[in-house]
Image (cartoon, rainbow, N blue to C red; front, side, top):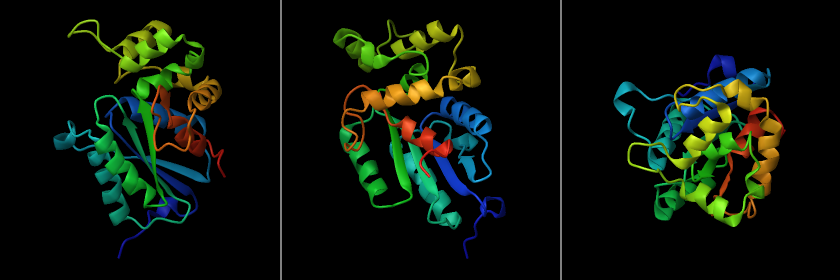
Length: 214
């Protein structure tokens, strides 16, 4: 018989599985610490050593399905996929999104093109960019093969220091309210299964962690 973690019994459980193995975990651990609430428990799934390179949306969904098969979920518990649009095809994302819509506890927080957009929204208002600048953000290109993509470079410029496995998440979270407002402004078609243009649905997960949706 599946059992529910004893520590979770009196709290709404938010389980997060992400495409990135470091960046998202660093952020959500810091967010959960900043917005500690006895009625919300955030559990971030980590990969085993032999799964470090498994990052497709299907794999992230599999992580959540495995968790769901092991533990009994309550009606208000939430399972979140945090994934990027960048290199994944619409067909692949559509399969994952369809499965999410069939499970009431499952949600997808996709960033287009990537999670660094959500981080940048703590520091910049992307809706004020020119169409040319927005295209540059969306394309997220590297200047050369050995350099980081555009958004990582811009984030490093804004923060002074940034690496996907080591950065000052609390400094960003100090501006999380602005990030939420800016992400909502970018989300022109919230009924779409994911942002088709520059945008991120991570704000929905963040509001849930902050207990704003209850």
